[in-house]
Image 1 (cartoon, one colour):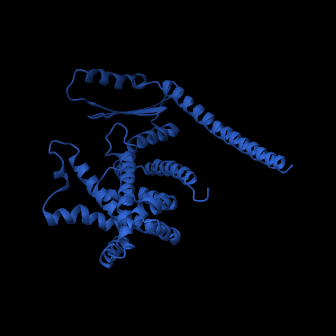
Image 2 (cartoon, rainbow, N blue to C red; image 1 turned 135 degrees about the vertical axis):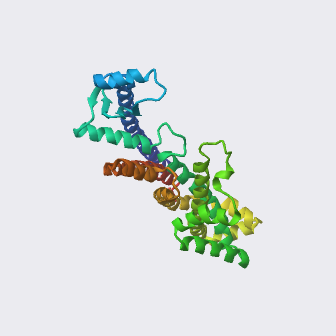
Image 3 (spheres, rainbow, N blue to C red; image 1 turned 90 degrees about the vertical axis):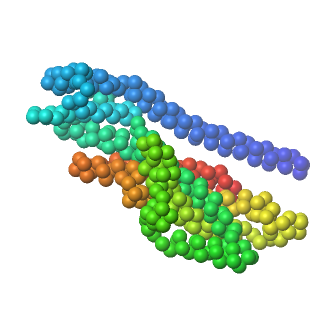
Length: 357
């Protein structure tokens, strides 16, 4: 009778587990269906874009005449800017001379709309600003790509450096502990912007070199790559100090009994840290590392001070040249989307490696 009851209980638990699994599958299936519908809709809308030639075909006869004449000229009289952003596109044309002209058009859903005034003018501006801030058509040293790359590399190097500093700070060797503590105190106690200035301006001034000299003189992006290298060093050094405290607190949160048990098994301090303590600490670090990533993502806007073309710098340049304060709206949206995307990823990682599973 007892065995039958145990079997029945096991069957119930198994059935409950299967139901939960089926429920989870249904939940993810709905999410996948929604994502699939969105992707299909975007693909259809992308195919329905009129195209650059279709937009140019809607220009006025006077503008069309100048475009045709430019085909045989080396020095063009018509300046054309074409921005294709996923499902919508925008073209801006302007001429110089005694009677300058300007025309703008937006292409969407197979139709072409004049964008010289009204709501379509705002839509066209938003497409243009977003295109430029995302760094579309440019290398990794521009726009959102630079912001994401700088943040990702900073956190990777920061965690690696922070782990070394954390182990140094909790070390029984006083010199190593004091040195690590001094490093952490210095970089947490001074502003990141000043640290960036010191790395970018002061260090080359003392040692007599320029960051751009690290790259071939023939490289057109040498200045930007040099500035990016300096920014990465400054940000990584700063992040390392904060990550050190994250790693240290995670390590010290592990029960001391595990150290004693490892010692009883004949494991050295290094083996205990690598095989037992650090793997468990990683789970506890994830939420704080996620916060550090988001903070660095927003602090990356400080690179405008050394003229790196991130989202903030491009926004400021657009505002200065075109006098449009609308540019900060897509800048906010881009930052929000990037933050939400990485926040979602870290949230999934945190759930997967949750300590309380």
